[in-house]
Image (cartoon, rainbow, N blue to C red; front, side, top):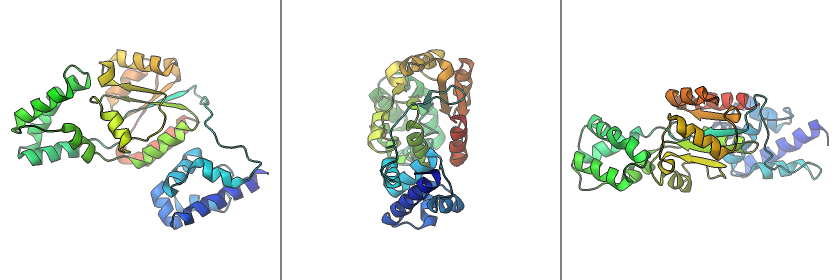
Length: 285
């Protein structure tokens, strides 16, 4: 089967998946963050090799999988499978930050806690940041942190974990991006986070539920970004040298620290997630 015929078969499979999901082309474009012209060209087979990022986004938006879409291009086509590759710049492993990259920052959770406690938001934030690094680094337990917070804002008790999980919002654009990157590269998470938060986020669908080749969780490692040891340990967990690592993070100090150790870096702005995904796609070519 030549490239033109393959493109037509893939386009047909995508169109069928869209219709099965009850979506118009415009609705699919909105869900997958695609332009109408791009989707129209893909469905009629005018784009021979759509980006894997685009195909993964379409699969997620239609409730199908890349494998199912690829299955529509005929028996002679090689099945889609995860094949690790190396980008032109040498990148083999991609680490994603969590807060501000995979989920929007948790300001809403702090605001909701302040509202429920009947105290000014700035008071809650001041107390929170006083102890945040300590619990993220496992110097105090989550229970100790929550009790300190409760005592100082006038509550008998509170569950910061539940406030956090109920109020954070996933960045769907980046969830699609993570799945697409994982099709061809080893991926991991690197996060300053509290004990048990990452597993709970995965369970609730707030972080993509995929296989991560490494998770550098500050609360388990007893260290934080931008500490040098955090990046050295993350590189060890990834089993690659720093020059083969890419960090995607919204914190400039974290980016600067990783870059100084030889990592490839990309600063992410969650207000412009689509642009961020495009930049990630470009750097991994």
